[in-house]
Length: 245
Ligand SMILES: Nc1ncnc2c1ncn2[C@@H]1O[C@H](COP(=O)(O)OP(=O)(O)OP(=O)(O)O)[C@@H](O)[C@H]1O
Ligand SMILES: [Mg+2]
Picture 1 (cartoon, helix red, strand yellow):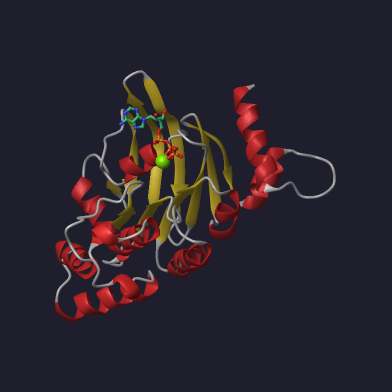
Picture 2 (cartoon, helix red, strand yellow):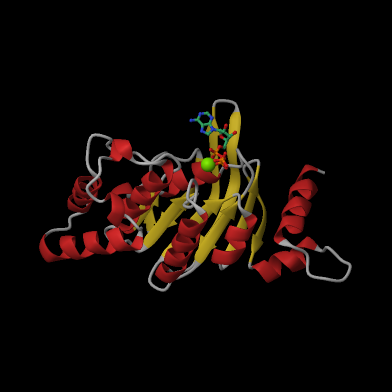
């Protein structure tokens, strides 16, 4: 469903991505894990056609993101790192606006709007102005606009950022629940979160993939010996320091 081949991206002198390659199969959840500045958001912006890569190719649902950006966009729901909300709108108005922009109308529009209101816990603020919302509620609105059109592919940049513990659990469940019918990439620097949600993990550091695979494959790759199974934290530190050395 998603195929990334040798993608590189440069901002001025900064090489943000360096020959990144991976694939994500239909129905799979890929967790993108990496420290601040690793290149996670840059990769997601390329996959959602917001920026063009310097070199390499990326396909979403068979559509090349540079050659057929509109086709690729149609398939994708995207939660950016900073959610672009219209603060002078109410939550219900904004969600309806996005739904209409995505081509929904009539009964389908009503059905999807009701679904995201429930699924994202927006009922208490449904008629509130976006400018009054707390950070966590803004994030929930961001998730709602990403899934409103029931996209085949979801790209979520730090979806649980700013949420309270209960809501984190809710959003994790929501993501896992959607995996049966969708292909999902999400980023996080919370190791437990990636472990809890992802089927496969890509660890990215300074623009390069330093390890990828299932949790068990990472354990094997990590080569940490001595008794019990290493934690993802131990593996993460080991992969990051191996890259530097
Ligand atoms: N618009 C930009 N102009 C210049 N440099 C940028 C720009 N956006 C990102 N970068 C640089 O590219 C690199 C990768 O940034 P990116 O935002 O993709 O990292 P990230 O993994 O999402 O980090 P974080 O966990 O902090 O969100 C960093 O060195 C960053 O400073
Ligand atoms: Mg980021």
